[in-house]
Amino acid sequence: MPINFSKVFYVYNPKSPFQYEALKNVNLTIKEGGFVALVGKTGSGKSTLISHLNALLHPTSGEVVIDDFVNSAEKKKRSRDIKALRQKVGLVFQFPEYQLFEETVEKDVAFGPKNFGVTNEEALKQAHEALGVVGLDPTFYQRSPFELSGGEKRKVAIAGILAIHPKILIVDEPTAGLDPRAAEETMTLFRKIHEEGTTIILVTHDMYNFQMEGVLDFKGDEKLRQDVEDNLVLGDVDVTNVTFGDGEVEVQCNPSDFEKAKDVLKGMNITDFDTAEVTFVPNEYVTLGDEDKQKMQDMLDELNECEDVQAVYHNVGNI
Ligand SMILES: Nc1ncnc2c1ncn2[C@@H]1O[C@H](COP(=O)(O)OP(=O)(O)O)[C@@H](O)[C@H]1O
Ligand SMILES: [Mg+2]
Image (cartoon, rainbow, N blue to C red; front, top):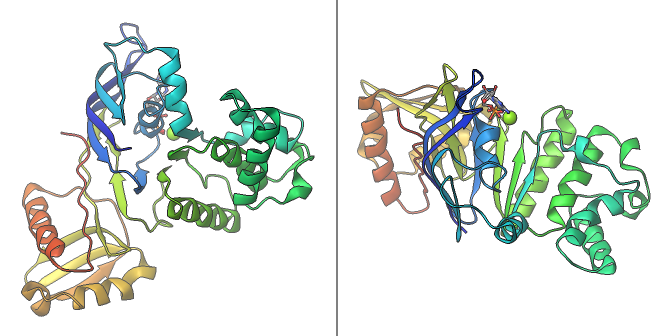
């Protein structure tokens, strides 16, 4: 179920003194089965963007296509279609723990499947399965969600979405407010769910911890503008930026990936790299100039010709 945003604009409170253009010409494609990070600073429109994926918001103009569902301003959506969409696209909000409301963990998680029409018994079965996936054992079933730790609450909230078996799982700021261990566990969980075939979109303003197939960098500049951000992934090494100097290539990536990135680069028979001195610097968001972008695209084209190297280039939004 690929996702495509085409020329999407979204304006909050149109034609009022509070009018605010949160999305400005967003164009992006997310392929089926992808594991994607949506990165950008606070206020850049990440939550607004993902709210279009399960039709909580409709574009002011432009179109979001999710499989056979078209989310646009023009067409009035039928509630039946929206319900079907929400069964396919599971969205876990930022601080989902605030959405827990049932008196027991199992009832909370079973709410979704029940809402989508399965029997009580079946809903509980799906709830138990989902709780197993997030690592909460049966001793949690009868506990009140409100007496759990922050990390456990979030797991319950994620289980509530997993229980409806979405094909696409979107999680807004999944590790915000979690301690490093809970954050690591949550990330491991998403990798596992992804391996089982679910498309995953994680929203974050911190991509330091992430290693994934594709990164869409969605960066707001001066709040009213979406910027073009370029990212490159070598194998499973996440590289944010590559710059070229005289006989020199500078690669920005997570420091823990330096060695791996070096091996990947050495393993490639690209003449430029044979002679170039490769240096590594930590991830930082950099907007590339036109010339660098072209060089990067050329390099990506070369990389794509190498076996066992997958290079991905994403271009999000138009300036
Ligand atoms: N309901 C709303 N009414 C008016 N402006 C809003 C509303 N929700 C968000 N905004 C504004 O839209 C911009 C994007 O918000 P949001 O999508 O929440 O960003 P992010 O998730 O990247 O932090 C922000 O400047 C925010 O203040
Ligand atoms: Mg947000």
